Length: 244
Ligand code: PGA
Image (cartoon, rainbow, N blue to C red):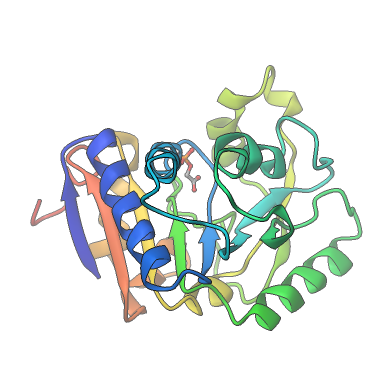
């Protein structure tokens, strides 16, 4: 793992966006694996600015998102379909037909997950996968467990994830209890992984990811075994790391 030190959220966002934009410049028809949550918003905003300046062109890019809540329609403002359009896709020249998010509106979990796996595999897996990390070390919605997951599957969200995500809902009871997520194995198929982290709430998870044992009790720890994984984290998120 390569750890890139950023000063704060803005610096982390710029550095992550720089890596993503380099990928798009080097391979205009690349496949990006994308993430939702608070962490990548700043990077998306930076990429939008560079797009507006004419520095980066998304016309040929395809995207595959990590996850989606089960049972939400694509137009539900809490869905990750909506999030991606609102925070990124609607502001760049990407062809929406090349953007993919697991189909949370299909409540047949087995069918929805199998279809997503088929699409990601047919595309050849992401050239670059952007990730955030949960306070509990999750990636996508792969929660701490006794094994690493393989393909896209339906998960019961942990109480800590429901609580963390409740800030985005009116009421904690509105947070969906289940989600479809790419599996850890699929994430590991990406040719490059960029995992971004900001803030002291992430410090323990970042330490466990980078310096702890490789264990499904911290799903992000498996990224130690990836041959091209870059951690972009700010001072607060790195504050518990030995070398930080
Ligand atoms: P956050 O979530 O970016 O909203 O902190 C990250 C994650 O849960 O993967």
